[in-house]
Length: 297
Image (cartoon, rainbow, N blue to C red; front, side, top):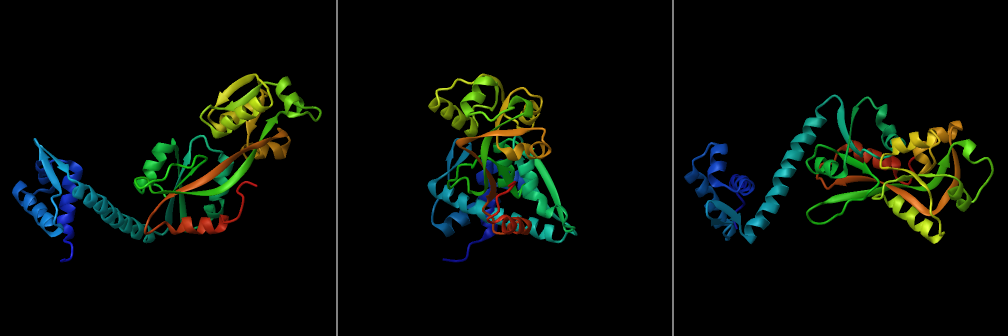
């Protein structure tokens, strides 16, 4: 078979994403007939029809869907090459980090700390919801996403979740709320609880533990933001159910006290990347530094 004509492939790729031959021809400043000729040449070379017409719309055949999957990879790799070489030409290399808005700030800082003082790197931090951040990662607007939820991985979502750390979860409170060593049962019976929201894996594990211990805690607040939970616990609203890394500074200064570690409950932290032919070299450096190191420990 003759070598693939990538101009024909790009025309097909543009039409496949538009779904309309006329609109694509106008956008590419081509005549509709000329564009049709390019598509027909590609179909002849591949030996398969790539489109079927239904009314005014073009729909991909099975061969067309296969061709589009490959075209997406080809042209994404080209865009990535341009972006990578553009970054290499800068005086400072941009490193773009997305972090779940509710994620521990201490964990985020632990991850990026090794590169903060590098003169050749500019760190760009973005926060948001997981779906928004993963879309940014897939679109090459981010180099890595920090989260405590490993996303699903399949053929359409080629994300790689690197487990960086797993932190135990404890009951944390103001020192005056626990003047003597107490069991988990006694602490829960005496004080209200500040909990993560119901979609959190920590919350699910905590509810299961309470059921096993036959306890019904008084819930003072349900919070999906670790920074807000930190403030509520500092204000003495109740016992916080959270990883000690979230309140590391308060524990070290004595503002808060870790009074009991909750058995069988932990929170995992991940760095999520996308499969790329030219990954950001800063990311490789960070993974080498953190390899085998428990972040925030």
